[in-house]
Length: 474
Image (cartoon, rainbow, N blue to C red):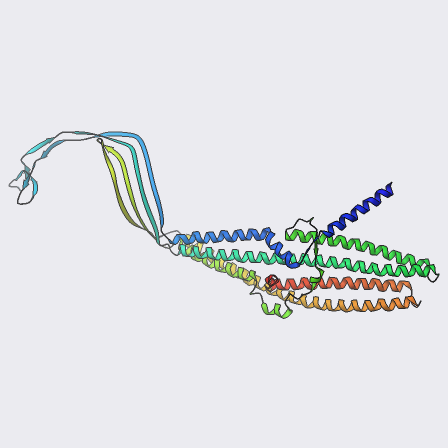
């Protein structure tokens, strides 16, 4: 029963694997790049930051224009009170026709003093006031005339920030492309290693058939058959390891491009050529000026310079033009409403900083120090990028040479197997030499697959170091 159970289990596993391979989605490197660029979270985050900086720039731009506000206040108060206007004797006025105005009735004494001759009595007046409902409404306009360059500099800094965000988005896309291509290259390599392992086992199976036939006819010993079977067992284990490696490589590729790691995919091994990549001379000629990192450093230095101007603007005169139109209604005095009218107003505000006890000097020195640090970092990182490019070019040269050598070694080992097989068949060479020749051929084949992968990866790093990685999407 156990044997039947194991047989059924193995058949079930094989059927599931076969079924999954049938439905496996075959992807090219270009398709993987497209999927990765759509699904990558870092790219989405960078795009959101880019839109945010665009809105910030528009907000700063609006500061050039007048600010118009509508103001309304409605207050109801139970507050009230009263006061008394003291009365007394007031002079009587009469119309002077010659002068055309009212003048008091008075005489002038010899000493030149004016003495009123007639008076009228004015009694004390008791007045009550109430607040009740007090309402004001108006429109105000504020227009900056001169702010020491603060608004202009802030707007320019916002524009630089927008450019930095755009460059960072492009840089993130490049890094995603590189990671995707690296994962794809590793998947191609592991898939080809399965082919290497299967080819090696095919050679051993063919040899095993011949040895079995020779043993039956008494031409070879049983020991030779055992040696071949040991190698077959090792080959089967290598096939299992290669298949597991390919499975892990596909899961890693799915993780990078944003697909479920359990999704069944397949890769095109035919895409291991370098037809879409540049040659070494193009890498060297491109330099580092095409890299997004180079532009990012330039913008950071420019931003630091603008910060000096922004700091300086805090200690320059400010001039603001203000205007408004206000309507007021409310307040009662002696039963009559005092306010019920509208009036325009215009004002100019001027602020001139005088003494800040060294604050402006220290802040300006701090801003200049930041600018100097940004320039030093720019020089240092530019040199590192130049070294990185040269190292990448060297790696491409070495990887190309290694590819040529492994290809030559593979051809030589193929010829060695052919000659060794002939010698073994006529009895001029022991089985151990033939097995060793086949093992050397397997190693040469695997080395050639590894060399192709490394050559591809070295070119990708050179494209990244020279700022040419985006050509993969064209």
